[in-house]
Amino acid sequence: MTTHEITTLTILKNMGYIPAVFLGLSTESYGILAALMIVDTITGVTRAGVVHGWRSVNSHNLSFGILSKMCLILVPLIVALTGRGSGLDLTLVAKGALSAIILSEAYSILGNVQSIRIRKDIQEFDAINFILVKLRKMLEKLLATDNGKKR
Image (cartoon, rainbow, N blue to C red):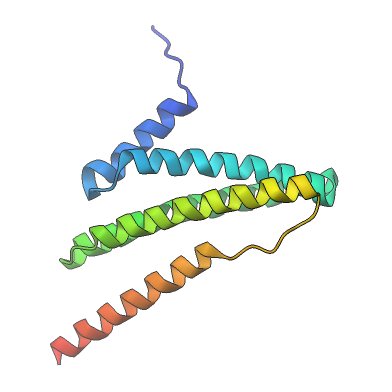
């Protein structure tokens, strides 16, 4: 029996093949997103410890943050699958959502680093909520248009 060492990079790389092969989304972008999410989690935990004291860092908050990020990874996949299932080409929208999420992760990391350096929380723009609101409004418009055609 042969054993193989599985590294984080290998896992990230292989996770990226699923959306790329089946939905036309970039494996590189998904790998970058996963790496940024890991860095954001590390800097977020560090920020919480430095700014609010290390007692504020607990497994409940960490678990919630990780689950939230896993749900976020699904957003471009959901958009692409929705397009595929409904006969619409939403690949560009899914790619745009993926790009926006990558940008918001970078923004969050920079905010965490800034908070760590000045040792206090800073006000951040909620980019993720903005993206989700825009995607929902776009889908509402598509539903309204689709319902209008069937009448």
